[in-house]
Image: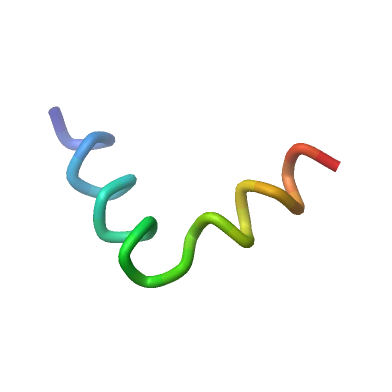
Length: 24
């Protein structure tokens, strides 16, 4: 429940970039 909100916030902030970096 908490992680979901954080993920959404990050997604809107541009967390996608961070996720991609983590994937690499």
